[in-house]
Image 1 (tube, chains in turn cyan, blue):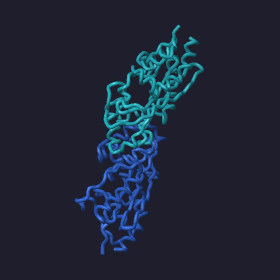
Image 2 (cartoon, each protein chain N blue to C red):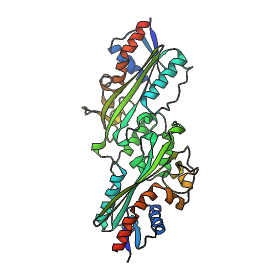
Image 3 (cartoon, rainbow over the protein chains, first blue to last red):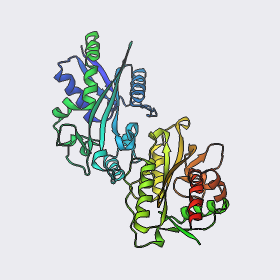
Image 4 (tube, chains in turn yellow, blue):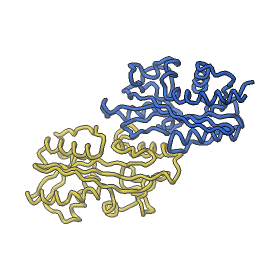
Length: 203
Length: 203
């Protein structure tokens, strides 16, 4: 029997990322569905002050509304020269939710006069899993630097601006498998694997 | 004899603010000139990580380049929900330097989902005075809250969004005299008065 797990996202890339990570880890018996598969459910707005607060609020809300075990993440980029912002406001940094090009352009403009030695940043992801009798919150971080122009066509969000520590390519130039192995969300999601495997075993 | 003091700014409102504060304090013998009065001098870009660093760098640069005693400030708004940003990037928050309307619109959009109890902020000003054998750096702070729309026609920068603690009006609704008495820059500049008075005495 297959256990349906709701990922509280409309982003197909996020759903596939978790599917790949489950596959690689050999966790079977889980079918990932996204918010587009439960059109009757309207997700709650993100108003928390931390990634963790937003992730667990979304996962609780999704579980209560649909009865499905629910995984939610809140992720973003924490830029040193911006005291850790855009942070929880990463997706709406330019004012319009989800406009990657505008967000990237604004971040580059804000950092226009920031010298190379102060361009450190990290991608951060908090992931929560909420199900009947289960509530887990984990965090993954991916350190790197913000460049001076977008490079690469892969990934999403701020990937074209972010060169991970130890890499010469941006996150948008990595293959999906390379990105999964390193990324903040990959690191966080892998911490959920044993909990997801236990759910699958419960059937 | 009158001592000329360069204020490292092209903003007439800032020059007049210091003139009023000197007048009120009865400090005579100082003529305030601005960057537009020394067209041969091209100011240095602001690349520091703190208000203080930028203020003293500008004041040193102005003094060295012109030989005039130089006052410089770096000021901005530190928003709690943005971990103290826009901070030193306040004037160029939207990417274009000095576009108050765009900066205000962006800040409001970023804080769109931030609830009232997390909309605290403070205006911060670091002011530096550099002259022959003199280097003073002071800081003034003005606590308040960020509203949900611009209100008032006075002031500049983020004034229409900022309601000072203990006020029902925004900073853009205060008279210049009321603002001088309370404001971050007023608080900082008044700490420079004894040092400016000493310069005037030296003639």
